[in-house]
Length: 398
Image 1 (tube, rainbow, N blue to C red):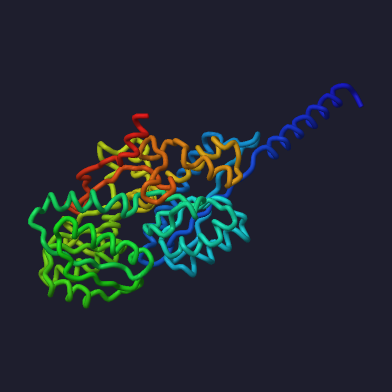
Image 2 (cartoon, rainbow, N blue to C red):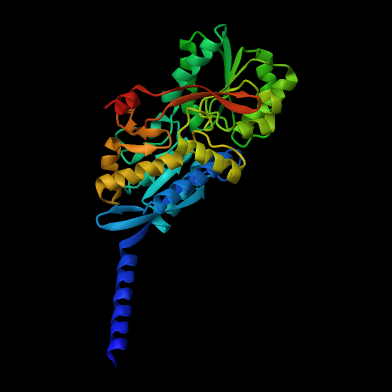
């Protein structure tokens, strides 16, 4: 063999070795999502899946995340929980037992999350959720973190703002979905309105999956409340009730504590949605939005046909928090990652953020982000006010 060929073979062998080493050093870290991809709440699940994919794309484009000498690229897989406990449990079993998921970057619904926690906590899997129930939080759930505001962050400032806008409000009716989310939200909502001097004329329930809302609307109209609070109902359900109320001539104050997608709401309710106050939406095109939010929102409109909201953008923020925690822990061991998450600081879509909520939940597992109130004006979500919680202000000034 001549010298030139020998050199070529040695060079090829060295290159192959380097490529093999590079392949070994770079691994994939699968992130799961348990969200409704079908049914009335599918707009939330599909939006959260899309936002998670944008976060993954950004992390990977920036070189992934390095821990303990290895580089990891993120990959996201969404599972349809159909907003039910049964599917939530099935999702958890599939993610953990079949797919080996150790990090869940988003889950929607208190009932599905409760069902998942039995497995995630026992198996040491980090679970991010948008669940509004207080029962899924606390020191007994150290692997569970909340990625958006919940009633205990939203309702008091949200309702207080509405009361100031309508000082003559005296009576209200609350309509809640009859599931874990609605059941945990209902007493908080009633008590908060009561504290503001608003009498609750009725607090009624409906089953998720209901398609006929005329009886509910008829009862509301007969009570003629100054305000109707639609609690944790998704936009399409609220739109159906508002449309019926409009036909019946009721024209009071409309409140959506879990109000998110104005496009989905107006697609069903039309002009009957005008003036509705939303507690989980945002105008990510506004001057108060960050550059990241404006860019994500513009791309979401093209990809999804509607803007992002407080629920859907939360998966992006959860993945940013996970990246920061993995770097801080220098590990992809979920136990080590969860130990640093409560104290980690990261760049969310809203700007600098971290975790708090220990005074309320007994454990710092609540992502700190602004409370935003929007209102439907000419078929669009217009931001009326944006306030940082005190813990976030303290973090920003630290």
